[in-house]
Image 1 (cartoon, rainbow, N blue to C red):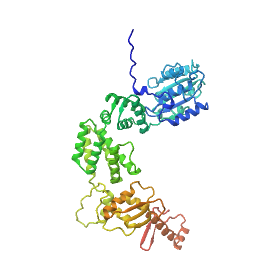
Image 2: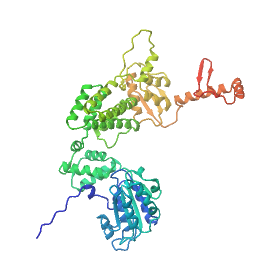
Image 3: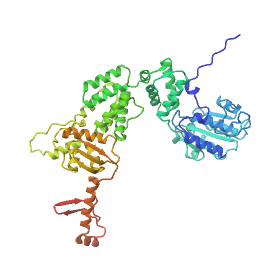
Image 4: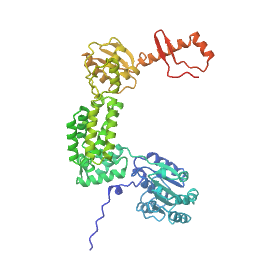
Length: 542
């Protein structure tokens, strides 16, 4: 008796290829459209599926072929969005051996002769299936003559023929072909959905996998199910069925997120030696300099998003969320944008430099040097406020690092009114808070150390940041209350209303009205009321 030959191993990307539209993740809009089309018998004669790699184009084409040709377990069924998977057409299509479902790789068969074979064969009815279906993958690789030869058949194909095209480069497909197809744009799969999908597959494989490891694989997949499953397959082999985050980082050459946070802290703190030591340590562990800069960019982006939205990414670890929230509260927007630009420039230099490690070191040192340069806005304010006589020495540059809530305690007493209150934040170099207070906030009550405001859509940490600054500057603990009740108009609205009233008084002046009667196309450029000159942005018409 001969020994049974063991079934060969199938990679996860093939083993878990969707066998029905109910297992196709992330493409709900397309599935709904196809379901309605099949149910109402409004089937197009040609379909075009486009999207990045690994989002399900070929799988969708095969599922659509099964849906159109399924006959049900009893052999009496019709086209359905939920193919049975057990009838002869479903099984044959799943195994890529159905005689009436022809798959063609346009990357290797690009010529007009290959298309001519399709045109000739399309005239004959299907052998055993309801429809003869042609699946052409990477259709953008067909030559111009091949596309032209296909146009007539594509526009008026026989009733028993359906075409399904798939491509990753839709811009290379001629408009004449696009206009003859029903187009579906398959979306990238969200990271959260990928992580859930990969976690379920790991459980089916009997493997243990850390939550952070799943998140790393999902991020590395960049919206592609196939890429993510290939990485998961490799991770399962690497860890003998147990996948931990550290192994995934080593396998993908990613930087350690904890060390990345330490490096960013060194850059913000101006610690050049600490930054270079951190870079050398990560390089010794196998992290490439460009991967390290990509991780820094991702971290700065996460801090900026947290500052705007008020909530860190839920996919981050608890420790990372705490660090990102702290930085979002203490770093100003100008500093974060400058860090972003400097890191982008450094990444471009690393990728083009003959010595990437040296380029990375110089880029980090440049960022640290920039942290000690004066802020342009602060420099202008100081120059205007402290005019120097001829021959006087320039003052030492101030640090560009964002002033934390512990700004200089130059404010001994609470401001007398709300205008002075806002001015205190301008003098304390808290430009973001000052702008929100001036432009958006409506005052309801001001009785130091208590203030009640309607702050509109201010960030979630707005009240806590105000309180921290006020405690440091005045030495008192303030009660900052945010409400949705309407209050006094904002200082910006008051200033605009005052300017509009002044302009209205000028326009009502008899002399001004007389000028406009003579010169109806004229525009008011500036005017004086007492000792004040108001300037309009427009220029007078000639």
